[in-house]
Image: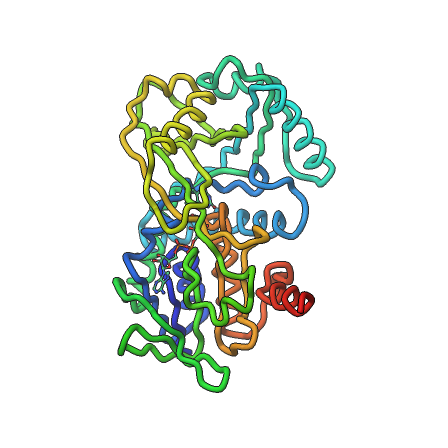
Length: 375
Ligand SMILES: Cc1cc2nc3c(=O)[nH]c(=O)nc-3n(C[C@H](O)[C@H](O)[C@H](O)COP(=O)(O)OP(=O)(O)OC[C@H]3O[C@@H](n4cnc5c(N)ncnc54)[C@H](O)[C@@H]3O)c2cc1C
């Protein structure tokens, strides 16, 4: 089987690995820039099915299932490529400093406890016992022992290495400008005069929607970019052992002891750039969590574009009305977390036409059904 993957982010890379493991003879990734340098590079790498959602419903189940794939993935990638993706499942803290934060934490705890989420309520004192550099103003917290982080840039590097070692064809700096469709069947895609023929085509183009057939017709379907700005602090005379969230931001301590902090949420189109206001807002939220960061050296800032679809859920499945074409987009704030399971689903669909993972809630069909209902 010959599979063409358009886009070269984390979703494309995990799909390529799964396809190779299932014996696909030829897998080609075509990327308009450099593999993994867009949202997948910009991300914080948090694996936060519980800190990121209220712990109920299909989305939470998909995120949790994907989170459980990481320990095996980390071990396999180390053996296959020699790259350590720095998986850290120490747990994530969610902390609050105001009356509103306390109310949010209590509500979260009530909902999540009822839903069976592994969550531990903490007093301010408990938080400080776990993390001495959190602000003394902390009033309450939650510990999510199953959440954690991965070094997403190393994950991209490991998956790229896997692809190179397993004869995945990689074409960078190549913009796919159209799908090649015959009688409703997608038979490839093209970049100018360069045509890539394939038995199956996977669109994994993140926030970029140009290639989605009939994008206008599907109305709400097209993803759009939501910018996130991030900053990094050089390692200093401080340390943290958990990812720490507040309602206004988060800090992520990396294995080499530098700390990254994020992130803005801005609907400003395809402008993956940082702004003074964005950086100031991220820095303020980070310093609220850990005032010690006010004296830290900020040595990095960057921005990326999260792929967001109108209902906030990913879109994964066969493209309606276009046989042989599959799409995976809309991973929004959780594409690193969701990458292992999305790669599996795409490989299932491309090789067998079906998957045992329940993706009904994420199917592109939900938009055609909604559109039909409106007309
Ligand atoms: C600031 C920030 C923080 C984040 N933090 C986290 C986090 O902590 N945890 C988490 O799980 N997720 C996080 N995310 C979300 C996560 O990064 C994304 O959901 C994920 O990277 C999406 O992966 P992707 O492969 O779909 O998109 P991308 O990584 O954007 O890849 C899509 C690729 O397709 C290419 N492309 C597009 N159109 C074409 C075309 N026509 N031809 C060829 N190539 C094309 C693009 O160049 C791009 O490289 C964060 C995102 C941001 C921006």
